[in-house]
Length: 235
Image 1 (cartoon, one colour):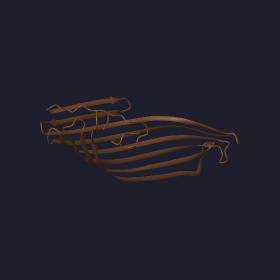
Image 2 (tube, rainbow, N blue to C red):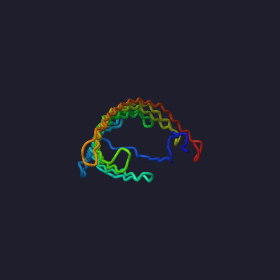
Image 3 (cartoon, rainbow, N blue to C red):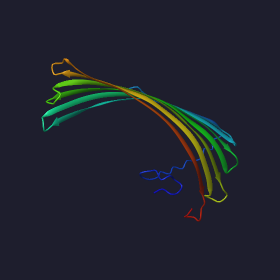
Image 4 (cartoon, rainbow, N blue to C red):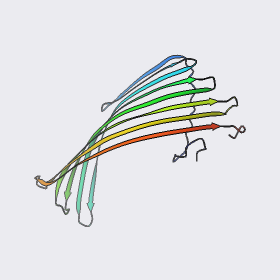
């Protein structure tokens, strides 16, 4: 179980990553580009400016990811010797744009006030093809072909205000955070399945469906943490 400093939401343990404070003065930046097969691309850029009183920073990340795959399923019913076999192939494209902007103001050597914002825009498109073979089942022998198209648009942001203050006593610290975020998600799936007789002629039955989904989320967080060392081993 985590200590009182952390939320008891995890299923496993705690990873405590302690980062060194960036002491570089002036303008610093970086650019990274990566590419892979099947049109997978990533781009990332960082830029920051720091002096003795403020630290301004920004980050932009772009990702274009393509996933392809497939599979099969063979089912035999022991009570009727019925067989239903299918094979499938799918492809999905994810495009993500994210921006982070922030500023830290050093009130003094011990206290820091910070504001930051994260903005995300995501587009997902996918398509799946399924071929079915039916033998010795009540509805009759035959085949079917099913196509599923999906599309999803997501957008979200979160804003954060942070304050930290280190006291003269080693290990004594006060941190506070207030954050607010919104996220929207709109998606649709289109199913189209056509059935055929064993001789290849189409059946009258056709399955067509459209599923629409829309989600909207607000999130708030107010948190204050105070650390008071009691001795070298307890706090």
